[in-house]
Length: 199
Image (cartoon, rainbow, N blue to C red; front, side):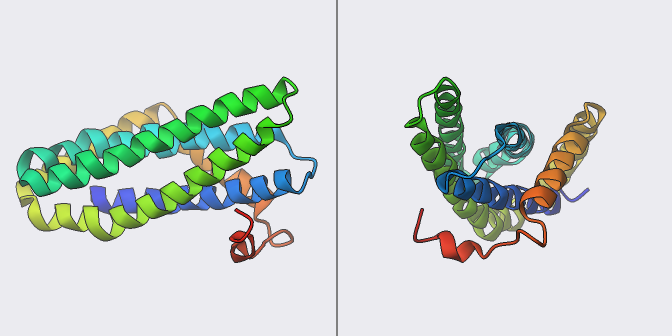
């Protein structure tokens, strides 16, 4: 198993969900009748696939080895860069959960916090993913020894097997496919560029 290729594939899946979250927020902004059960599924995907599964794998298998073996450059890139952004994403999700609870209890103004935290998360993750794909992963592949990369690949395979035995990938990717059909179907497909000026 090539761990870097798998993580990049996961990035593609995460970016698919970011588009769906954007569409949901647009509907909410336009005061359309939205399904918050669907939104809860999107949040479930983010917490369990994007963060716990994908970010967990990066932190436990790749980033720790980069810091250990690649010196100050990796320390700066990982500890003061990627890990800070992981924590920032978790903060947006925590604040989103609070806003969603408040909205369900009748605090209509919380819709602003729902949209703000959701869109902030999508912007953060888009930039974060691009940095990892274009800089962090290539830095690791170029500078970690073949032996260490082989260890990462082996650990990644075990990590995936454990997650698969718990149904993580199947459950999360099923949610992604369902939400994509519902919110990005051919009849509803939108040009996301038109929303840049709004958010």
